[in-house]
Image (cartoon, rainbow, N blue to C red; front, side, top):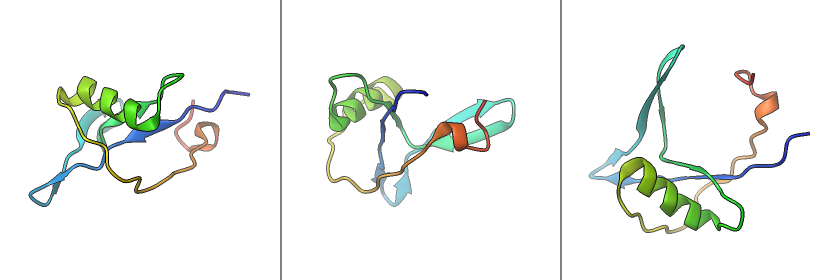
Length: 80
């Protein structure tokens, strides 16, 4: 059994536009919200600030929680 891993993603909207990252793999181009995995001892807001600094090179201010998604990678159609 794999350990549970939590992640935080940012919803950043400015001038009516949603900020996403462009990514590529062998299937082609896809887009994701900025953010990523939570490190041990880190709160979700701390993880989001760190991940946005790493991915976007900017500091974000975390506001309200918008959505919780329960995602089990082993059950996902693209799991390895």
